[in-house]
Image (cartoon, rainbow, N blue to C red; front, top):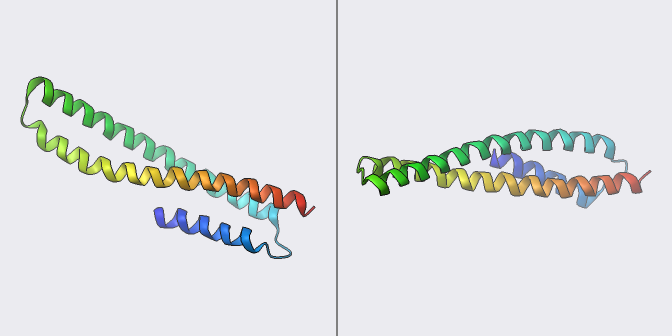
Amino acid sequence: MKKRIVGYRKRIDALLAQSPQGTEWKAVLREHLTQISFFQHERLIHLIVTVTFALLTVIALAIYCIACYMPMLPLIILLLVLLIPYIGHYYTLENEVQKMYVQYDTILDKMHHNT
């Protein structure tokens, strides 16, 4: 997913930088809105998963701290091993979607200046 979202954003950055004559900005805008909606959905799903893993980690840590229940240690380690990449992936999705919002504004600006 990271490769796809970064690749798409860079492709739009290149299109905006070149601004070739005859570019159909309305079509670009429609496609961009479609891609944004896909990535927003992906971002929401990963937010839910990340928050769930964070809550499970906190609950397991609380059980370990309160009850000194040693079998929780492997679970805590496993949850942390999964949580850290989830946070990194969500961070990427969030930042790339935010950049795509700026691209959307730029496409709108180009669309209005070319009419």
